[in-house]
Image 1: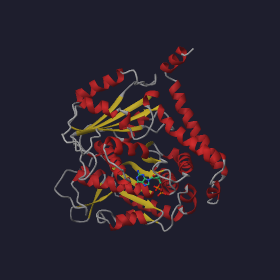
Image 2: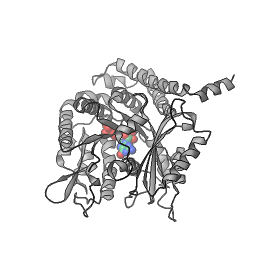
Image 3: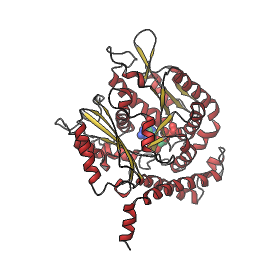
Length: 448
Ligand code: GDP
C-alpha cells in the first residue's frame, strides 16, 4: 500500500490481551481468516498492518508480543488465531516480573530485550516505508512498565527520533486491580519512558469500566469487554492509515497535537457508544457524532476538559459522514462557553476521514453503526490524571512502604524522588500552559 507500514508492539499481560481484541477486529475489517488466509480478493489496505507470507494468499500481522512469563502468550499460541501469528513474533521469558517495575527494567531485561529487539528488527526489515510504532502496555504492572521502557529506549536508539512512537498506556485503577504498588510502577515507568514516546494515550481502566457498565449495559465487565472497546478505538484511530480517504499521518498528528515534547498526553474520545442491546438501529448525523465525541462519558480517561484548555484537536472520522456537517458541528463546539482554547493556538481542528465504515466483532458490546469518530485533543486538564497518581504515590512513599522490593532489584531511592518530581513538574507544565490563555487571567481578575 502507498500508506506505509505500522508495527504494533504488545508488552506484558495487558498489552498482549489487548492484542487479542485488536487483531481479531483487524482481521474482520480486512477479511482475513483466523489462519491468515484472505477471504476474498481485496484491495491492499491490509498491508499497513499485515505482510504477505508464503505462496498462498496468506498474511501475518506486523507485530511483536513480549512477556516476561509465558502463560498469557501461551493462550495465543494455542488459541483460535494461533496460525495467524508467526511464532518468531511471540517472545516470552520464564520468569514473572512480580508487578515490579524494577524487575522488568533491570534484572530480567537483557536476554529478553535482545530477543524482542531482534524480532522487531525482522518485522521492520519487511517494511518498505515504515511509518511508526504503536505500543500497547500497562504502566501499573512490572513487564509493560519496566521492560516496556527498555524496549522504547532501544527503539529510539535503533530507529532514530524520526520514527513516530505512539503508545496506549493502561493507567492503574485501584477498583479493578488490587495491586498496591501500581502508583510506584506507573510513575517510575512514566518518568523513565517519557522522552521515548511522541504521543501517549492514557487509557484509564476505570473510565472503560464505566463505559461498559453504564453506557453499554454490560453487568460485570471483564478485561475482554474493556479490551474490545480499546480495539474499536484503535481501529478508528488507524482507519485513515489503512484505508482510502483524507489521512492524517502519525507525523502530522504529532506536529499538530504536541506543542512541547513533554505535553504529549492527549485525551482520547470515541463515539458513538451504542449498546448492542439497543433495539432500534441508531444512525447518527455527523453533527451528533461530533458533539458526542466531545462528551466526558465518551472519554477514555477521567478528567474534565471544561476545567482545562485545549491546545489542539485531531478528529478521525470513518464511514458515512458529511464534510459540511463536520464544519458546522465544529463551529458549534468552538462557540460553546465551556470549550476554551489557549490563546496562542489557532483553534484549528485537523480532520482525517475514511469512507470505510467501522466493523464490529460478533458478540461484542457495541451495536454496529455506519460511522464512528475518534477525537484526540490535547487538553490541560489531563493533569488531573497525573495528580491522582502522584497523590497515591506520595501516600505510599511517605512511609517508604514496599520500597525495599525495588531497591532489592537494583533501583535507588533517589529514583523514586526523581520520578515523583518529574511528574509533579509535568503537572506544573500543564498549569503553565493553562495560565498562558487570556480567559484564565480574566477569571482571576473577576475573583478579586
Ligand atoms: P505486566 O504483565 O507485568 O505488565 O502487568 P499487567 O499488564 O497485568 O499490569 C497490571 C495492570 O494492567 C493493572 O492495572 C490491571 O488492571 C491492568 N490489566 C491487566 N490485564 C489487562 C487487560 O487485559 N486489559 C486492561 N484494560 N487492563 C489490564
